[in-house]
Image 1 (tube, helix red, strand yellow):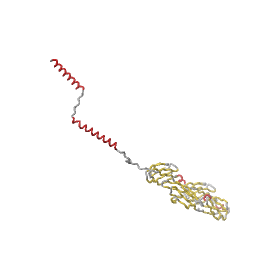
Image 2: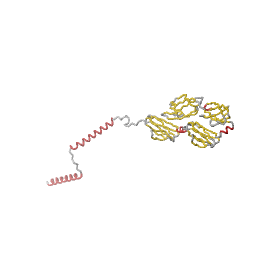
Image 3: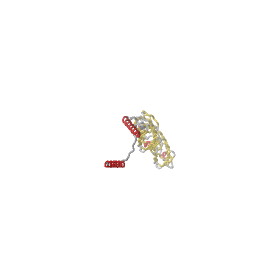
Image 4: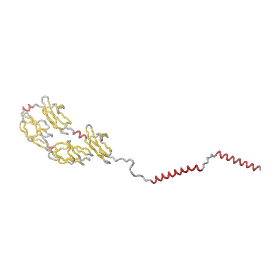
Length: 358
């Protein structure tokens, strides 16, 4: 009996010892009541449903094929070239660069100013979407054509020269960029002063050779002078013999009647005059030039000016133009400006055409 009780006591002691070790080695977890687990389960289920819905929306959505939210308007291109290069370009008053220059612009009409040194050209352009408008401007040619040149000589040389009352130097003298039109040239050697009227043409050279010898010297030789004013250079002939040219201010001729022929073979023009030469005096003869025929065309088309005056829009046929050298300017709103020098003859019609696309 004692043994049995002793064994139970030992067993209970061992069980108590084991439970004590378990309690010290295994952390205790608080027991949760079932009703506290319901919110967590609900949140998990809702999250799963939301995720499934998002996956379904992504899978079934059709990609949009419409235009972007902020579409970019189609642009056009403006291409500028000039002679000489390096001309500044201003569009609607704003500097954009120097030639050669290529710009992307919104469709519309612009005012373009092209400047090289003191020479400037203003022209409108129209830019269209997905297209190129080109402008080519010859500023150097325009600068050269603004005036004419005047060469003045004297016999003997070293005489003082005044142009329209303004002293310019001594002969031989060359004056550049003289405004087109009539001018008064005065040559003086201190003892004798001679004045002449000369016509200067744009882009051409007018020549005067003036004798400052006293008129009495001519009278002593029983001779006189012949002075011919002509807008172009012409040879002066008598009986088939060349006496000189209109570049010479005066020719000395014997006193009497002379039948003079004046000719310019390049312009197909010949005319004759009969003059009376008096001793010690100058016979003055003015030559008016006839008109020739000029036909003008351009591709695709252009507005045309002749020596600064508008003559219409191409095609232009049978224009009546004084013979000689003239300046034509072709203008197109998209293709720019082109300048051309043309020589009109008295007999053969002159035809000129330009391709503004090149």
